[in-house]
Image (cartoon, rainbow over all chains, first blue to last red):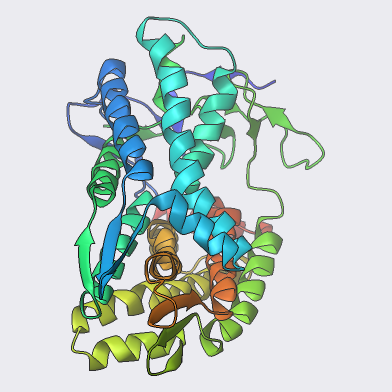
Length: 200
Length: 220
C-alpha cells in the first residue's frame, strides 16, 4: 500500500500533484498545468448542506406527487406527474426510454438526496454511518446520472410547444423541479470528497 | 494558493472518491491494483482500457446517430392528419412557426451537442496516440467542455416523453414516441459513457519516444 501524502492534492483532470494551502473564503484553487478547479473554499458547513438537502427532499416529494403541467382541449383535460409520464412511456412500448428517463429524472435524484441524508445526519452529530465509503462512491454516480436540470427545461419546452395547440398551465410540480435544480447546484458546489474530512 | 510538486509524472495517485493522495507503488505494471488506504476505492494511474472503451462507444454512437436522425422520433395525430417528425424536421417546424429561440435551443441540445461530443472525443482519442504534444491545454479544456454540456442532449427525449404523456385525447389529438427515439436515447447514453471512459490524464501523458522534447519544453 502506498504512503499517504496528507498535504498534497492531485488534479483529477491531469494527475499533477500540488501542495495544498488553505484557501481564502470564496476563492478557488486551479491546477497550474491544465487550469481545472482543484478545490473551493467551502462556505457551507455540514449543517448548511444538510439544511439544503432537507429542502431538496421536500421539493422532490412535491415534484413527484404534483402535476408538472395540465392541458385542456375542448372540455377534456389531462395532467401528468413525473412518475406518470415515465410509466406512460413504458406502456407506449418505449421501455428502454422509460428506464433511461426513470434513472436520470427519478432514481438518480432520489439517491442524490436519500444517500446524502443518510450520510449527513450522523455526520452532523459527529458519527460515521456504516457503509460510508460505499455511500460516497454511490453519490458520485448519482451526481453523474442526475439530469433534473435538463428535465426541468424539458417541461418548460413542452409547455411552450403545446401553448399553440391547447390551453396549458404549469403545475406545482414544475416549480418544485425548478427549486430542486437550484438546490442541487448549491449542494454539488460544496463537493463530495470533503465529506471525508469530517470523519477523521 | 497552491504550488505544483515536481512529480515524476504519475508518482502520486489521487483517490477519485475521497481525494486522498497516495504514492504510486504499482509503477506501470497493469497486473498490480492499488486501493485507497482511507476509503478502499481502486486507484488508477489512468483508467483501464480508456482509449479502447472510448472508441467503442464513439463508433456505436456514430452508427446509431443515423437512424436517430432518419427515423421519426415523434408521431402526432390530430382530427385531420397523422404526422411523423424527425429530429431535424421538428426543429424546422419550430423555425417556420416563428419560434426561433426554441428552434435554436433544440438544435443545440439534440444536434450540436451529440455531434460535438463525438467529434471532440474522436479528436482527443486520436491525438493521444498520434499528436500527444499538440495544444494540450486547449484539449484539456475541450474535454471539460463536453463533460459539462453532456447531459443536455437528453432534452428532446424528455420533451417527447412529456408530450406523449400529456397529449392523449384519442383521435382528436395525441402524441406518441417514434421509433427513432430509442436510437437517439442510445446515442445520448453512449456519448455519456464515451466521455466517462476517456481519461483526460492521457492528454498530459508522454509516449516514451518524446521524452526529450518534453524536457526541452519544461525548461523553456
